[in-house]
Length: 318
Image (spheres, rainbow, N blue to C red):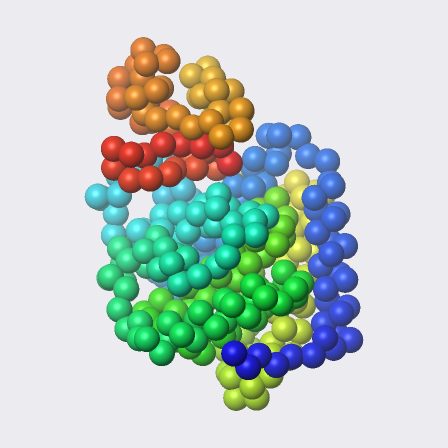
């Protein structure tokens, strides 16, 4: 794997800026309620801007409705499925890749595809033996080098797009992998930032930078662009946090938990604890439907993560 870039003065400046903003965001005092609202807003923005790069026809209000309700997946169209898929992909990264030394490999890419693309773009196709070898070489390189997490996140995106391993969804997977490497290196930053707004606000430059990195065979300019954009995003997020600029003024009732829901969270405060629908039924003497509503509500608020499928589904704390 021949990856070339220089730690330019611009790149050094951008990385220093990101480090300072990261510390400022992580140490800024917030009440649990305000942090919950800001994290929810941030997830909303992340999904909206992510899908805007795929030409989604959904409005912001459509996305808010999907994220704040328990709509049946059987009743939604492909654009709406993309919202749920993107949310699930970010949750997968948060749950499995926040501050870990686990190696990234082809199975991780396939997992991301299944979560974020399969239900709307169809089963994964187009992957060749040659593409697999190039992806393996890329992940080996990133695992071997001790680069800054921002540099790793910056490298993986244009490289995966250049490899083009699938018939569809390459850009989406590449952008998700940028988040994965940031979270892996401890740069989840309270989950309160997104990269796609910077791309979309000047999508012509975004595409040009990706193309330049491919033509030049050198990632320096792209990494300067990527790190500068991340700094802009974090600076904007810090301003939102300091001034509590909530994006969505949802009814106060949306944030209020009933006693059962509060007890479910208390049950999951211990490390490694998990809970199922049947557990909730037994604990509170409620029906399967009521337990489902309570768990779905906690998931929609970003307080619980869904794990597994079908009858094997269980829930854990974020």
